[in-house]
Image (cartoon, rainbow, N blue to C red; front, side):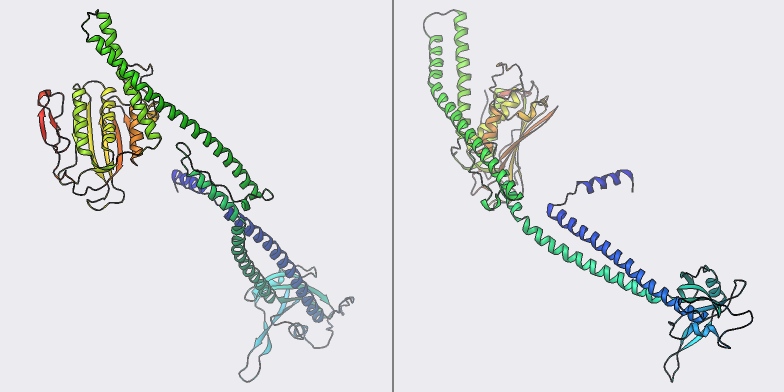
Length: 561
């Protein structure tokens, strides 16, 4: 595996986290496995020592009978050339007399070499029970016996063709011998013991895992209820608006005498503080909205009076000087600007208060045509283009307030006109996204309105805050452009009230505001015919040739003077 792939795999394994329940069960099963392994190892070692001790006693007893040595007696060798016991072969004693099947015995000469050797074997007969017969050892087997140390202690040696043996050397009146007993039975018993231990341990681990998972699941059930409560609170829109009373952890899971109860009680205390803070915030916001609404209503009348008296004075019969005329014009302009600001604040206050809008099935196409025509008239030094759904596409209808959606379009186009230099191309595009069909509401069907320009773009520091109130790209807050910093805030508030979203993506040379509204198929829509697309709305052409379209029929009414 290459380095990058290996590093990526390591990060993936590191990124995976086990749940508390899994960690507890795995830890318990691992601890049981360690304890069972230790117990099994100690049991196997003790049983092995016991079996080897029994086998060593057996091999020494067989060797003592062959050499003529009784346990605990002194060794008294006969004179050379004299064989105690007459003509009886000592090796027959080794392979008979109750010795286990497969016992081996070999005579050791005076010079230490291994002479004749025998091994007891089972001899089967067709007419009788199996009997024991002796076979001579092969030279390789005799060589294996010769490797045993001559210290009268049992040793383990492997004999070719016979397997492992426990062999001891003995001296006695009958001579010197090497006697061995097979280890097969001992090894089989040890293997059975290990197999039983492994099977019992695995079965115990499986049972412990199942039982532990169930017990831990029951023990962690209160903690899951606490987590569910925290999740429900985290899904509430706590950042704005009026918040419903926060759910609390049940009293059974908030007992401070238990660890989980301590967590539940702490969460309840925290939710209490959060609820108090949200209530205070809601009360403060309500007072601020009420103040803005009241102030807006109160400012409407004096602003209208200021504008009226200034215009009356400027148009009166009395002669006024140029300075006074200029001052009166500025008073009218500032009063008009303040009136627009008050109207924007009142609209935001109404939207914040959740006042219902006038919802109906509205086609965005005529709204875009009207808004773009107005923007073209206000900014003839820009290039304006329009893209509407094609003739084969259904109308881009939504369930909304037509006047408020028109204000969204006007604000977006005014934002593009105000904050881009002359000669910038501004494109308004309407398209439908999703699988909704006319007459049948589609799942995930939206109408997308885009306002795109190729201007210098929005500064990266301002981009995250463009929809905030009084957010302005001009750090000096110059009023030369007439911007109040509320246009995009109104766009977001209106779109949100319609259940939609508005986003912005901006890089130098491309800025796109995207409004996404749920699509509602029109029932008997009067806009069955496609709207003319005034792609010729370009200030590079003569303004007198730019057409104006009726917002009800989509037909050209007159030319702009």
